[in-house]
Amino acid sequence: MTQHSRLTQTEDGIDREKAQRATRLLLEALGEDPDRPGLQDTWERRVPDTFATLTEGTQREAKPTMRTFDAESEDLVVKTGIPFYSLCEHHLLPFHGTAHVAYRPGEEVVGLSKLARYVRWQSRQLTMQERLTNDIASGLADELDAPLVLVEMNATHLCESMRGIETESTTTTRTTIGDPTDVERERFQAAVDRAEGQR
Image (cartoon, rainbow, N blue to C red; front, side):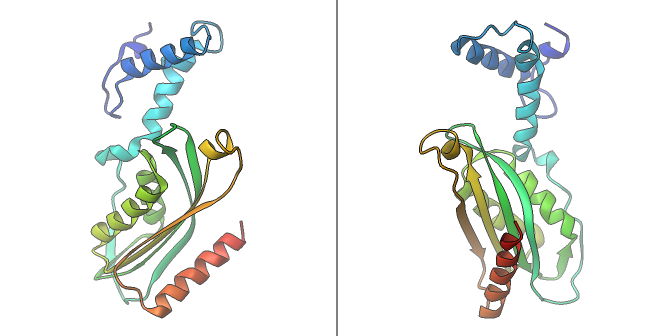
Protein backbone atom coordinates (compact mmCIF):
# COMPACT_ATOMS: atom_id res chain seq x y z
CA MET A 1 0.00 0.00 0.00
CA THR A 2 1.10 3.56 -0.62
CA GLN A 3 1.51 6.06 2.21
CA HIS A 4 -1.73 7.69 1.07
CA SER A 5 -3.60 4.40 1.26
CA ARG A 6 -2.46 3.79 4.86
CA LEU A 7 -4.19 6.94 6.11
CA THR A 8 -7.19 6.34 8.33
CA GLN A 9 -9.53 8.98 9.75
CA THR A 10 -8.75 12.35 8.18
CA GLU A 11 -10.04 15.89 8.35
CA ASP A 12 -12.71 15.02 5.77
CA GLY A 13 -14.31 12.55 8.19
CA ILE A 14 -13.85 9.30 6.28
CA ASP A 15 -11.88 6.30 7.55
CA ARG A 16 -9.94 5.64 4.37
CA GLU A 17 -8.47 2.33 5.48
CA LYS A 18 -11.96 0.92 6.09
CA ALA A 19 -13.24 2.43 2.85
CA GLN A 20 -10.38 0.81 0.96
CA ARG A 21 -10.99 -2.60 2.54
CA ALA A 22 -14.72 -2.38 1.93
CA THR A 23 -14.33 -1.39 -1.71
CA ARG A 24 -11.75 -4.11 -2.28
CA LEU A 25 -14.08 -6.70 -0.71
CA LEU A 26 -16.97 -5.52 -2.86
CA LEU A 27 -14.88 -5.86 -6.01
CA GLU A 28 -13.89 -9.37 -4.96
CA ALA A 29 -17.55 -10.20 -4.22
CA LEU A 30 -18.35 -9.17 -7.80
CA GLY A 31 -15.73 -11.60 -9.11
CA GLU A 32 -13.21 -8.89 -9.95
CA ASP A 33 -9.49 -8.78 -9.26
CA PRO A 34 -8.93 -5.55 -7.27
CA ASP A 35 -5.26 -5.54 -8.26
CA ARG A 36 -5.78 -5.69 -12.00
CA PRO A 37 -4.92 -2.59 -14.05
CA GLY A 38 -7.86 -0.21 -14.00
CA LEU A 39 -9.11 -1.25 -10.54
CA GLN A 40 -6.19 -0.69 -8.19
CA ASP A 41 -6.73 3.08 -8.00
CA THR A 42 -10.47 2.42 -7.68
CA TRP A 43 -10.27 0.94 -4.18
CA GLU A 44 -7.04 2.67 -3.08
CA ARG A 45 -8.03 6.23 -3.94
CA ARG A 46 -10.98 6.96 -6.20
CA VAL A 47 -13.89 5.46 -4.24
CA PRO A 48 -12.72 6.76 -0.82
CA ASP A 49 -12.16 10.23 -2.32
CA THR A 50 -15.57 10.16 -3.99
CA PHE A 51 -17.44 9.22 -0.82
CA ALA A 52 -15.49 11.80 1.17
CA THR A 53 -16.85 14.44 -1.21
CA LEU A 54 -20.37 13.01 -1.42
CA THR A 55 -20.77 12.94 2.38
CA GLU A 56 -19.47 16.44 3.14
CA GLY A 57 -22.94 17.28 4.45
CA THR A 58 -22.13 15.35 7.62
CA GLN A 59 -19.13 17.60 8.30
CA ARG A 60 -20.07 20.80 10.15
CA GLU A 61 -16.79 22.41 9.13
CA ALA A 62 -17.77 22.01 5.46
CA LYS A 63 -20.97 24.03 5.96
CA PRO A 64 -20.84 27.30 4.02
CA THR A 65 -20.55 30.47 6.06
CA MET A 66 -23.96 32.14 5.85
CA ARG A 67 -22.86 35.76 5.87
CA THR A 68 -25.90 37.99 6.21
CA PHE A 69 -26.82 41.60 5.49
CA ASP A 70 -29.49 43.87 6.90
CA ALA A 71 -32.81 43.26 5.19
CA GLU A 72 -34.37 46.28 3.51
CA SER A 73 -37.79 44.70 3.06
CA GLU A 74 -39.83 41.64 3.98
CA ASP A 75 -40.44 40.72 0.34
CA LEU A 76 -40.06 37.04 -0.49
CA VAL A 77 -36.58 36.07 -1.71
CA VAL A 78 -36.77 33.30 -4.33
CA LYS A 79 -33.89 31.24 -5.74
CA THR A 80 -34.84 28.61 -8.34
CA GLY A 81 -33.03 26.05 -10.45
CA ILE A 82 -30.40 24.99 -7.90
CA PRO A 83 -28.86 21.70 -9.07
CA PHE A 84 -28.25 19.08 -6.40
CA TYR A 85 -26.80 15.58 -6.16
CA SER A 86 -27.36 13.28 -3.21
CA LEU A 87 -27.09 9.60 -2.25
CA CYS A 88 -30.00 7.30 -1.50
CA GLU A 89 -29.34 5.69 1.87
CA HIS A 90 -31.13 2.50 0.80
CA HIS A 91 -29.07 1.67 -2.30
CA LEU A 92 -26.05 4.03 -2.16
CA LEU A 93 -27.05 5.23 -5.62
CA PRO A 94 -27.42 8.89 -6.55
CA PHE A 95 -30.58 10.90 -6.85
CA HIS A 96 -30.29 14.29 -8.47
CA GLY A 97 -32.37 17.15 -9.71
CA THR A 98 -33.31 20.73 -8.98
CA ALA A 99 -34.12 22.56 -5.76
CA HIS A 100 -36.18 25.73 -5.48
CA VAL A 101 -35.91 27.83 -2.32
CA ALA A 102 -37.75 30.89 -1.03
CA TYR A 103 -37.74 32.71 2.28
CA ARG A 104 -39.28 35.77 3.86
CA PRO A 105 -36.46 37.66 5.58
CA GLY A 106 -36.56 38.55 9.22
CA GLU A 107 -34.00 41.21 9.97
CA GLU A 108 -31.32 39.83 7.65
CA VAL A 109 -30.82 38.42 4.17
CA VAL A 110 -28.06 36.18 2.83
CA GLY A 111 -26.18 36.35 -0.46
CA LEU A 112 -28.03 34.37 -3.15
CA SER A 113 -25.02 32.19 -3.92
CA LYS A 114 -25.06 31.00 -0.30
CA LEU A 115 -28.49 29.45 -0.82
CA ALA A 116 -27.09 27.26 -3.60
CA ARG A 117 -24.02 26.41 -1.51
CA TYR A 118 -26.22 25.48 1.44
CA VAL A 119 -28.39 23.18 -0.68
CA ARG A 120 -25.27 21.51 -2.07
CA TRP A 121 -23.79 21.01 1.40
CA GLN A 122 -27.00 19.54 2.85
CA SER A 123 -27.36 17.26 -0.19
CA ARG A 124 -23.98 15.61 0.32
CA GLN A 125 -25.01 12.82 2.68
CA LEU A 126 -26.78 9.48 2.75
CA THR A 127 -30.44 10.44 2.99
CA MET A 128 -33.92 10.31 1.49
CA GLN A 129 -35.42 13.07 -0.65
CA GLU A 130 -38.20 13.74 1.85
CA ARG A 131 -35.74 14.16 4.73
CA LEU A 132 -33.38 16.26 2.64
CA THR A 133 -36.18 18.67 1.72
CA ASN A 134 -37.07 19.05 5.40
CA ASP A 135 -33.41 19.44 6.44
CA ILE A 136 -32.84 22.25 3.94
CA ALA A 137 -36.01 24.10 4.92
CA SER A 138 -35.54 23.81 8.70
CA GLY A 139 -31.81 24.50 8.41
CA LEU A 140 -32.33 27.70 6.42
CA ALA A 141 -35.07 28.82 8.83
CA ASP A 142 -32.58 28.43 11.70
CA GLU A 143 -29.60 29.93 9.87
CA LEU A 144 -31.49 32.99 8.65
CA ASP A 145 -33.96 33.32 11.52
CA ALA A 146 -36.54 33.50 8.73
CA PRO A 147 -40.25 33.39 9.61
CA LEU A 148 -41.04 31.62 6.32
CA VAL A 149 -39.09 29.13 4.19
CA LEU A 150 -40.39 27.15 1.23
CA VAL A 151 -38.38 24.38 -0.44
CA GLU A 152 -39.35 22.23 -3.41
CA MET A 153 -37.11 19.47 -4.78
CA ASN A 154 -37.63 17.58 -8.05
CA ALA A 155 -35.38 14.57 -8.49
CA THR A 156 -34.64 11.49 -10.55
CA HIS A 157 -33.56 8.46 -8.52
CA LEU A 158 -31.07 6.10 -10.13
CA CYS A 159 -32.28 3.32 -7.85
CA GLU A 160 -35.49 3.49 -9.92
CA SER A 161 -33.90 4.24 -13.28
CA MET A 162 -31.11 1.63 -13.17
CA ARG A 163 -32.82 -1.12 -11.14
CA GLY A 164 -36.27 -1.89 -9.74
CA ILE A 165 -38.87 -0.54 -12.19
CA GLU A 166 -36.06 0.73 -14.48
CA THR A 167 -38.09 3.78 -15.41
CA GLU A 168 -36.92 7.37 -15.22
CA SER A 169 -39.45 9.57 -13.48
CA THR A 170 -39.46 12.67 -11.32
CA THR A 171 -40.26 12.71 -7.60
CA THR A 172 -41.37 16.02 -6.10
CA THR A 173 -41.20 16.92 -2.41
CA ARG A 174 -42.04 20.19 -0.71
CA THR A 175 -41.63 21.56 2.81
CA THR A 176 -42.98 24.80 4.23
CA ILE A 177 -41.76 26.35 7.48
CA GLY A 178 -44.09 29.13 8.61
CA ASP A 179 -47.33 30.43 7.14
CA PRO A 180 -47.12 31.83 3.60
CA THR A 181 -49.71 34.28 2.38
CA ASP A 182 -51.65 33.39 -0.74
CA VAL A 183 -49.57 35.93 -2.67
CA GLU A 184 -46.28 34.40 -1.44
CA ARG A 185 -47.47 30.90 -2.25
CA GLU A 186 -48.52 31.94 -5.76
CA ARG A 187 -45.27 33.82 -6.36
CA PHE A 188 -43.19 30.81 -5.33
CA GLN A 189 -45.25 28.44 -7.47
CA ALA A 190 -44.97 30.75 -10.49
CA ALA A 191 -41.19 30.95 -10.08
CA VAL A 192 -40.93 27.15 -9.79
CA ASP A 193 -43.13 26.68 -12.88
CA ARG A 194 -40.94 29.07 -14.90
CA ALA A 195 -37.74 27.33 -13.78
CA GLU A 196 -39.07 23.84 -14.50
CA GLY A 197 -40.43 24.96 -17.86
CA GLN A 198 -36.95 26.03 -18.93
CA ARG A 199 -35.38 22.64 -18.23
